[in-house]
Length: 343
Image (cartoon, rainbow, N blue to C red; front, side, top):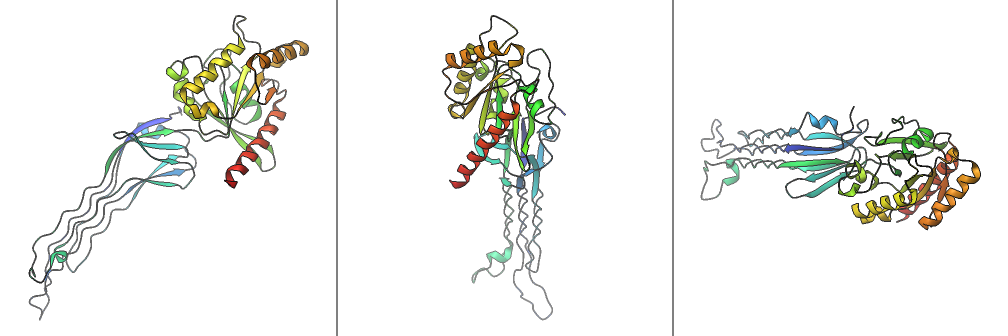
């Protein structure tokens, strides 16, 4: 199924039921008074995170969701039945935005988490509510209130611990294939990856993390060039970014350092918070050169970038250095998770 990470839907909560106009009529009680009950409450509309859904593709076909209306009240002070709440299942990682106000209503980050997106209308009062000492036979009742109506934009941001970024053909898909069971498409032309891929990386018993591979970035991605602007948001939830650099680009005129700086600039242009996120440098395809030449090339790239963070040398194709990288990532993710829990 094609990956869909944005959708627009309309939700309508149920209207409240109308109040009843009724009078008590029983044998030997000629003036029983008003006994019209209130109308039932309209159904609320909720979004709920569920397992087993990883795209918003279903919302391409079903774009309107309506909650049930409350029923009218009746005599004998009987309140109408309320509409059953409508629960719309969405994948974990969905952000819900009100299109009219651009207000972010909430963020579904866990399975079972519910978010109220449209509140049902209250039921109208029956005539029993209007009885007073001076008005003993009220003949009016109120209609139920209308439920909320909203047009919503759903945005899916993948939930991953580690995000991969780099130029097209930097080797991101090859790396995630090497360290997880994910099988993204790999080919020798740019933009092979057209949608995010998630892979679970296991580094021992009961120890694992999720890695996300997004389409390659190019200069100008934050302004809409290539596919980057559509998928950069998926990196915002990650704990650590791996910046993959091809030490031996197919085009000899391409400078890996210049391209790495361009991608860092795109991150900053898209989001200051994303640019500040912890980023590791991963020098890929070291198996394409003799060991001494690869060592020299890697040191030159690190020196020119003035890189201060962690640096790893790997080959995604031959899996050289990938075990050490995954072990280090697991240790770092566990430390970050412990710090977050302490806070």
